[in-house]
Length: 326
Ligand code: MLT
Image 1 (tube, rainbow, N blue to C red):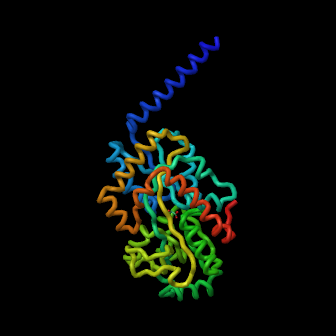
Image 2: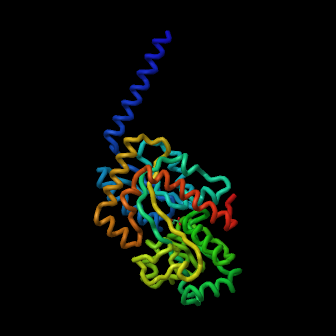
Image 3: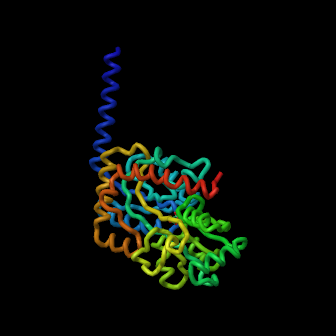
């Protein structure tokens, strides 16, 4: 009786393993979905669509982009955390969705480390503080003086509580001593539209979507929030150069749901590495001011430890800001 049961169990295990291997061998044999956890037209969307197009060519299957906004990127990320771990549904995460919101939210919608399988870090993206074009200030110094004098009636926009744009302006406001009201959107795409329409006063946007608006004169740049200036906006000084000790940035990385089969993770990682090597992809990303990460930072192992260190790194400044979402 025992022997018979053992035989049945063993056959089931072997059959399951064989299905997993076969699944990995012909992966992908149908279109994949890349969830962008923000509204269309924003920086995650812009970068995601460039990567999805080339990734589809490399994999020989279309990569369909799906925008699922809300909760500062939490809704779309949660959708992927709960999806089947078969490699067909991935999320393009950010420092907000996979690090900062873990401290900002009293009860995060998911565990950024435990509920996902890290696949590849793609790019580092600087953040720029931009203001509505009719705000009567010309430079960083004027802006600080104006914002201090008018804090009670000013607003800043973001892609929602826990997004990179929210945390960037939050740590900036803390460092500069500015108690300003937050207006959340489902992405910095719609937030930028309202900044252009003069309905909010400033936004900490990713350089990739801020630069075209700055170049076109639709909004005014005040400072870059990375330590160093960006070659994409070489004349724009950093907040640190201007005397405000603050650093904020985002990054973009691909995650699958937890327990994704190793051979599928390896295939997807190799395809993403190939995507990032493609000259037109690099040109477009770099033209937007995004910085494709070095090959040693593109591995699943690197992303696993990076997420851990980013969660730890951001915990202190978020706690110091006193901002928490129930
Ligand atoms: C953010 O974290 O602020 C996002 O990247 C914004 C967006 O993509 O809309």
